[in-house]
Length: 88
Image 1 (cartoon, rainbow, N blue to C red):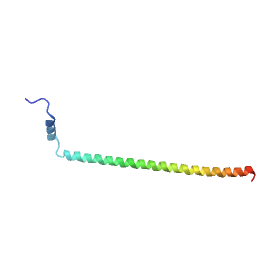
Image 2 (image 1 turned 135 degrees about the vertical axis):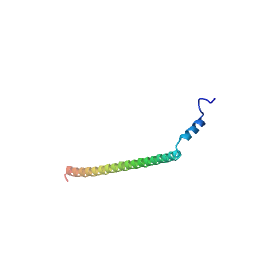
Image 3 (image 1 turned 60 degrees about the vertical axis):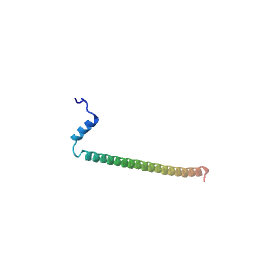
Image 4 (image 1 turned 120 degrees about the horizontal axis):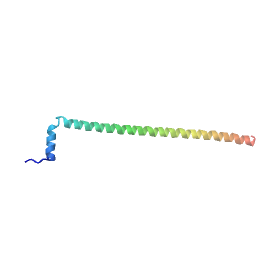
């Protein structure tokens, strides 16, 4: 009398007989597609990170330049105001 529940090896043998002939090739192909997609996402994330870094540096540099320009204008205005106050 055969047991009601099959062993794992029996089940896998039955399943192997029911799989299409090109199943393993399709599984390997799909795994390659997944690796390629992951690689593309990594490259895209790195590119976006680099874009964010460059944008941040540009904004910081422009802000620094504007601050220096404002400081120079303020110093010039202060010098003129001081000269006027002294009556020069």
